[in-house]
Image 1 (cartoon, rainbow, N blue to C red):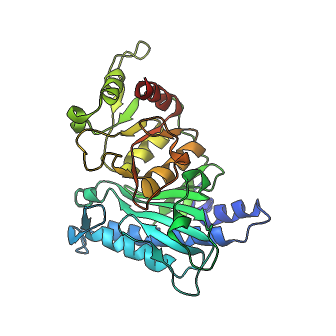
Image 2: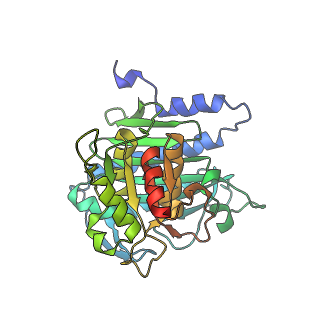
Image 3: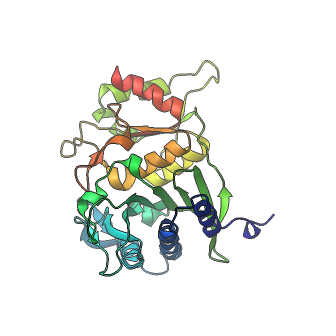
Length: 336
């Protein structure tokens, strides 16, 4: 049967809402607005080579990273779409230092943290990139949202997901009731359910890590990766390395096929001793997704990513995420 005759993401969101008689429809509306932003970004990504939007913008973001033109476009698109949607009270972007207020009169009861274009350093070479998002309920009194509303632990997220722009554009999201994947049919401009109830295999034979940093790794990481390279007595082969260098792309592959992704602390990043990936925009939303799919996400000292309370908008954390049995094995090396 053609996917066009299948379940659309709008229908899936509505059906999920009906399971909760107390639901007001605001979260559904928020997700639908985000999806529209994703479609706009997807169209621009697909036309990037023809629309003079490849390359650097000349700006440097709060992370000290060079901003790509598509970064700028994606960030502006999400801000414009969401600032007057009426469902959120405040936003935070991986690209901006301060919180992003919504327009007066359009305040809602949710917060939105997002990485507008993860993996943007790969844009010019046509590697898969993506948008990551995280949604929490507003906690503070008053109409306007505050930074404190955004600084909530990952386990309190009411929704999280990503849109990956690759050989096809896919939306993968959770509202705490499983993980579902939708593929965009560009001929009709609609996301159709293609990967219902995604479950990450409990064990895999794939690992994702940047081995260029081997000389900077702490002993725990080195010993674990050496273990992965040993010949398995059952399969007669070691784990296979699969590393793209785009978190969305690496995570998506592992979510579907099974695998473990590592971005631990290392001796090289003395200016970023806490790790490289951002808690709010990358680690926490991916951690909720992997948990709902049956996997695990921890730091390299064994902490549950979802239970870390952020202290700042751009807090960084080490991340070990993926198949449950593989992460549990890695944890033994890090805690030994």
